Length: 511
Ligand code: C2O
Ligand code: CU
Ligand code: CU
Image 1: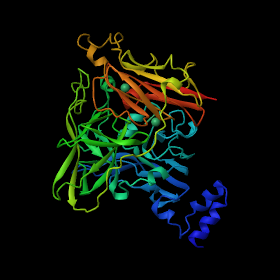
Image 2: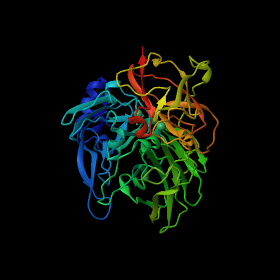
Image 3: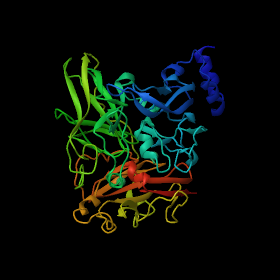
């Protein structure tokens, strides 16, 4: 069958049948090779215990995700260089995906598609554990636009450990609007999943947060990028698109180029910005993503450039004293870019990227009474609106109407106070009650309307967000609308030790 004939033939079928036909990947279809045409992707994923060679000496035990494409574009799943991280998924807006997940771990887990809008029962929430040895097929249409998302385990009270041991990976969505732009593609479009780890003497991962360490979040002393330590990107002297995903349990990065070259930011959590913007540095909390336009065309072959995190004040007086890793806010190197070959490819930085329909505060149904998300602390647990997570309970006031634009106010101005009493040994602990929290909302992308009490520069609030870093003393108003599904979802702090200990609440999207 000729390609043109097949196209015409396909155009006459209804969407469902079409998906089935494309899914079988006829040999003449280029869509099966470049990952751009497949209207269906059928992917097998497994959670496995494995070993990764991360350090000289013994291999490190990891729990990770492996898999393969059963039907659809082979490029829908690209393995990582290291088994310490799951493969990168490349999906397409409008695509129907089936991810058959086989849990070969010895305990329940889930996979959550962070940033995507999917039906509640497909969201991989702690309410829907996949038992050890069982399978579940996550199936949903990709409704989100092109952007940098990620997936990770999200089991009840165990998310921190599962993600730390390797249960995460990048999830890239492509679409037509993005295809129409001249952007770095394929090998010049690089997802970078950034995490921090602590290794014991036997090269094994150490994860044992005490109550106090859980309060601060577990911090590592080694940075892994795409599952590898001392990560080096061998690059040509031309423009790159770097998609930085903070999948660290609690570490916040203040991203910058080591030589002071400004960052050109082209995208945030939920897709491209309207136009690229320049920042001296950019803050990136756990769960947040940032896309950089990195033009290396003026670099010399043989030179290198580090992507670093600059020192910053995290507002935690106890930072580093109680933790095994580098303190929150410590200066560190994330990775090195080594220019190992020249290139004559010249890509101009696009002036415009995509159109973002702007939410207006005035159009919100609750403009006078923003829905509060107040960060607090009680009995050495972080709270939201004074509560901690109850698996089966959606507070009555946390019902949100499908399709209604709302204003939410994330408030990190309180210093907690009280509750630190017994067992804490009193004095000098007050300052620890204030710390940064990246607040993540499932099932919708939101827009930042305003911030108050800002103490840090380097936020990129111009684009779609699903996770927002709010430093101590700050509050942020966002506009959010759940467009797609009713059902039970979550919002929570993406410091995974906070989430696991209850800094998370259910909410219900209602018709
Ligand atoms: Cu990235 Cu509810 O999580
Ligand atoms: Cu999420
Ligand atoms: Cu938190």
